[in-house]
Image 1 (cartoon, rainbow, N blue to C red):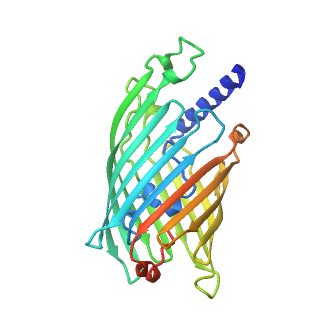
Image 2 (image 1 turned 120 degrees about the vertical axis):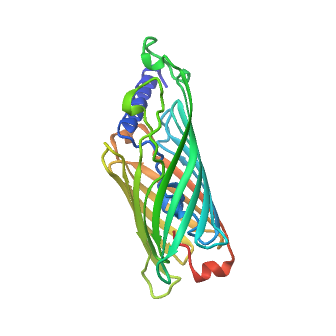
Image 3 (image 1 turned 180 degrees about the horizontal axis):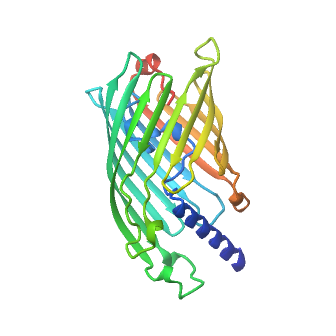
Amino acid sequence: MNHFKSIKIGLLLLGCISVVSSFAQQQPLYTMYMWNQLIINPAYAGSRDAFSASAVWREQWVGLDGAPSTQVLSLHTPLPNENLGVGFTLQNDRIGPSNNTGVWGDFSYKIQINEKSKLSFGLRAGFEVFQSDLRSLENIDPDDPAFANNVENRFLPNFGFGAYYYGSRGYIGVASPTVIENELHPNGGGSNDLSVRHYYLHGGYVFNLSADSGGVMFKPSTVVRYTPGAPITFDITANFLIAQKFWVGGSYRFEDAAAALFAFQITPHLQAGYSYDFGTSNLRTHHKGSHEVMLTYDFFNNDVKTKNPRYF
């Protein structure tokens, strides 16, 4: 890569990061959010009636220097008191010279609404470690004040909340996973240096398209994201489940990307998934799409899933 091209892509990336900061979309995006909603909503903890472990690896904008790379591990389970659930999330998100690692504990309390439906309320508490090292960037202007403080290392405690209504076939939830707007750079960049509060509204439903319950099922889902001072964004996803084994579908993220999704129920306990995002924004000519891989394992008795299949 020649020097001019390096500078061009570097400036492009910094411009994207600036836009992300300005419009407050600081939290990572996931295409396969519908299979691990604990990422965005603490009230989801324990809702699968099993000890559930899920890992996701996402590489965004492949081929673009400094593009986002995100990894997350989530664990959650109901407690012996079936109205209670707990969860744990470890998330790492790297963009260019900055890295953000979050450690979260989740607690949920469930109310039985009727025979098939529950309403869950959740709380989250934990912290993020925000690090940035501008020494890793090529400084084309030695007098640039942005490089005056080359290294940042911030410990940022936070908490969040959520509500989640669900039954055997559908769900709807609302959450704000981090409420405190921590200052990322204490020496000042104004409001753009805050970790801005996010709000999520998410929902989905599973329809049986065949008389045979082992035939074809259709699951549309959506997540809507809102941050104060920023445009509302959303994902719309359509998945088909074939023979209770294969998931195939597609997704559209408003003004950003379209995606293809695939998942396979390897065993009654183990599920693996993959998605590929095709960029639709002006940035699409500078990268080769985004990859996301998911692995989920549920520790439960097989008869539990037979009586109450897990579709989300």
